[in-house]
Length: 418
Image (cartoon, rainbow, N blue to C red; front, top):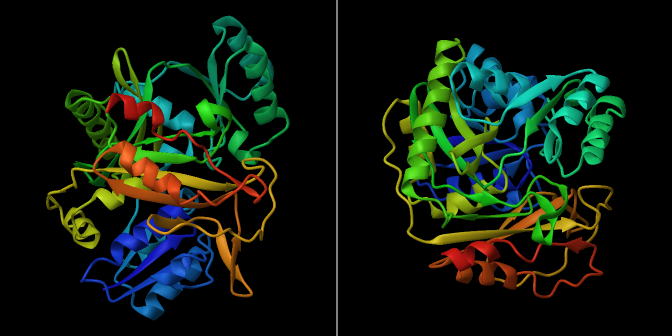
């Protein structure tokens, strides 16, 4: 088989690495890819948003299957366009991807189908939003309605912070059109976790859960990012928590989407809070999570190509997992998620970890940074502590003046519970 992976980040690199293990695969292409992907795939300079260019490429190269990583082409209808041309694709349609594309739609959808989530209200008026915050108090969560690369969520500890978040989104237009509406939610308490599943219509096949760390700095300080590290499994979750999330969230969601004429095919991601009342939805994504994918796929025993083919054919892929732990640490550009410098040479890394590239490229045969999150070092071991120690050893020669930084506490709290 010839497979195309659409995207340029760490998630896509992780998918490619897993696909490369399959004996069924003869050639992998990445569009547009990055510096690290060129080891396992042929990178083509077609932007992930150039849907017509991708359609043409798939026809010319006789690609057997396309897998889409990022959310933006999904919400632009890449799956719809491929389906019109009869081209095999593992991705949800634009109609189904709206579950991620609009937080207001997702909240209304969850209300309709009694899916547990935080209480909320949506506003396009600054005055009305601030009056609601004034009435509800803090802490409170303020979200840009649309796609904001994981940065459109502000957990405000005070009313003043919440008012400032409303101004950033609705007045300053920090997130452009993604912030035309603001969604304000009650602040749930508990431990977050991510539960992804392979889905085709009403069939749902959950993966092992993971937990990612969104805040930029140690001890969950600083602004939200796309994710600074992740690990799997999650020791504070019970089988009952996962079963509840599967039945009352994932299965209810795909059933509701079918009922509304927008059946789902692809990866459904539920970002959940394990509250005292049980798991509740913080957000939905309609694709592999990043950086969760980078710590979940190394634990998958199955051939990923076979899994996707089985799911598309309506057959149970019988997912099997290694009884081990995986911890991944993100190396980010200094200044991220704010202003940062590109084309900084990446320092040497100690061998031993699984390295997935996110924002990298080659300039004059040197690997340099090309984004905020640069790469992720992951390690698989028998315990979370062993995996974390091995992953952190990768960065042992990186100093504070290198132009890069990373969190030093990924999975540390959970090691005590394991």
